[in-house]
Length: 257
Image 1 (spheres, rainbow, N blue to C red):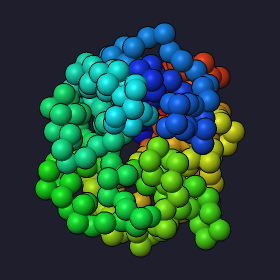
Image 2: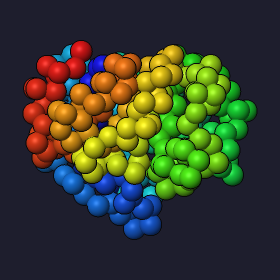
Image 3: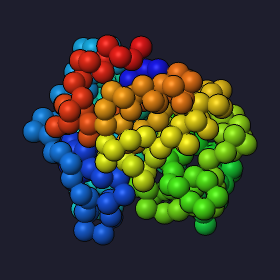
């Protein structure tokens, strides 16, 4: 299990938010923590500690009042740690190259490949043609629904008709180098992992999967290791002391490979 760090950027600032609170209208999010440092500071820290595969997430949509400020922060982080971070948030075939050229190892995509709540494989193939499978991470962040875990798009605001299942993971793994999966219901709450989702992802384990959401203690981290069969990588946000939480960053590094 690798620790995959994060740099979440909202309204031009590095933040930790409650994922379920995010609203495009008014650029609102319930904040857990707002960093005084810029995104490049965290990128250099992760580089110093040899952490790879972390993600830089733009939480403002293209065209919004804060998007350019948020994008500028993201590009500065990628440039500070070339090849060490992934970039997501509003990625399309038209702008993906800019993030890769700035230093992203991968681009992270969800919303572009969905329409009317379904995956459009023509759009997915277009992305693969634009960036190559080895540079593509598919974000299958999800929320608990009646029949399982439904994929959510548009910064976790829109529920789709697609469910995180072994069959879906099998189908999409042909197009992606990795998956990133936030458990959106518990994201930013540091109150425990989504155990059933973690079990399901641990059973699959065919390409790298990074899980995010709910880790608030070292016991949660061990539960993730156990239920995920040590096959999942982990992101810790609000619970990390870097972002005002109780979990010491240095101890997290010692507890993960």
